[in-house]
Length: 229
Image 1: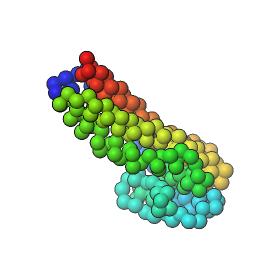
Image 2: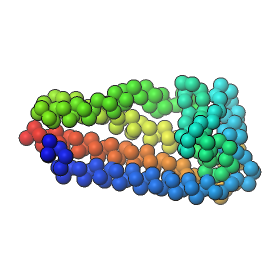
Image 3: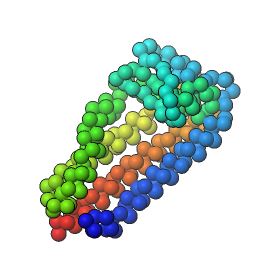
Image 4: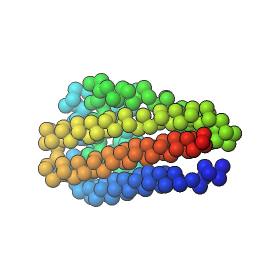
């Protein structure tokens, strides 16, 4: 077990954690900056969400307020768009960007966007991989059973796949959000630029998560190969 805890490959995990931390700090600082900037039209995030859904011809999605800070999400199964306390009634550029992004997911659902469907189908497998991969790997390393380690790595690949397929879903939702904000003249140019910066910063957290998972996968493969030798 000493090798597992003190091998040089831990550097890969540290790099991944560092990237995730930087991405998180960036989105927090960017959101905090544009949280103070209101939009000149005086729209609230809830009103913007209603306008975007209406203009897209989406009548079967309800908007609900949810507790928390940046806990916003769209549930395709429930047809519910949930906006957090910090976003729902806010007229800030940051809040409107977040609300529009979630509307982007609702539009993806309406047009049957392929990557969104693929991500939804991969959720159960990703959950299994997340729960079982490391217990199997650790168990296999303890007893020296390579098949358990390989199975654990294979299950972890399901987690990585889920995170990879999330990237096009999130980037496309932001693209749709910015497009509709511009076309509906909801935000002025400078305000739109601020919303774009918020969404780009948020997208970087997903990129960092993918890189971190890939580095972790590489580490597991290196450990497995070293043990076999």
